[in-house]
Image (tube, rainbow, N blue to C red):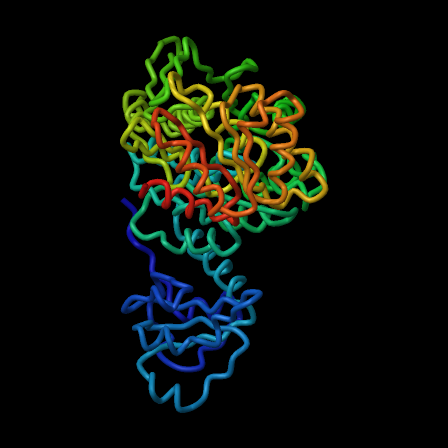
Amino acid sequence: MNEQKEMTAKDLANVSDGKIVCGNADVILENFCQDTRKIKQGDVYIGIKGENHNGNEIYEEALINGAKACILQGVSIPDNIKEKYADRTIIIVENTITALQKLAIYKRSMYDIPVIAITGSVGKTSTKDIVASVMAKKYNVLKTQGNYNSQLGVALTVLRLKDHNAMVIELGMSNLGEIRKLTAIAKPNVAVITNVGTAHIGNLGSRENILKAKLEILEGLQSGGTVVINNDNDLLHHWYISAKERYHIVTYGMENTSDIMPHNTILTEDGSSYTADINGKSYPVKIGIGGNHFVSNSLCAIVVGQIFDIKMEHILKGIEHFELTKKRMQVEKLENHVTIINDYYNANYDSMKAAIEYLAGIENTKTIAVLGDMLELGDYSERLHRQVGEEICKCKIDTLITVGTEAKYTADEAGKLGMNQQNIYVFNTNEEAIKRIKLLIENGNVSILLKASNGMNFGEIANKISKK
């Protein structure tokens, strides 16, 4: 097990050209927090300047609540504050997020451990969860909390390194150049790309540009490192053919011939099983969550486990018992045979398609898809929302409820393709949808999918119908 490496205010000042304006330069910096309401005794407060709120201006709230140090930008600390909190340390930097990233790079350099970095248009978080579960069978693993995969989130994840001897980290992006910064922090031994879809296509303009953005992960890959890709994804498959002589690439897939593939796959509502052939021997794989996409995620976990010489029986246990980050494919059973599938943290066409297919696979029940707007699609928005309507019809979903301005295209397309108009409901607000859902589930025996971008606040719907 790795010994914890400590960093001080002096280290931060050195790597970020910051200035310690008061307090002890040797104070140890750990347990970082950017929310004054969540500060605990001895935490380090980070002031973040947002579009509508400047956390740098309320640093005294953090000090009152017990912060032992503050990292701030763009503020002047008056003498009376310095005197009042003489036992605390305040560091002024040019940009707090950039300073934290530099500190995270410094901390990462202290650890010679396996690091798996995961990116992709869909499935990053669930793949991170299952890979971390497998790695935990051999290592003390630090993993990204939730989907803390942003410019700030990745730095904060690395800064949580203590006595860990492995890290599984998720890298997100919405534009070119962002993963380049994140992979420079993570410096992975293994780079995983789950797929290239349509998330953030409004910003990037094409799937080809999304691929280009995802491939930035390779810029931080350590010498001798391994690239792991989903070979069923069309763009990744073509990239693999052109790049396999330049990188050490291991593939997984269910359709295209890959290094790891499933055989005799059985999909059920509550889980999946298949056989994996590893080094000439067949192993039974069980997953406690249903859906084809989790079969794909588990294949990735097998590949990573093999790279780090984890025994196959331990890999299988890690897959079978992994826990999924909340708000992602959470299946909740209510009385009267009502099932709610909560998958509303984020949404793009690819994840919508996977969730609808999962809903359609639930047998002996009426199926209701409650779908909200997919955001950040730009000029592609109408086309992709209409494609979701195609999936609704293809999968023969019984009832469609849409909420939002863009999701209306989904309802319109489903109607055009022959879905009974009496089974299509178009609403502007969550409250309207809640009233209709409560009527539809009165007689029981229904399965409901809640799927939308996080900004649609579908958690409100989930809470209201769960309390029915």
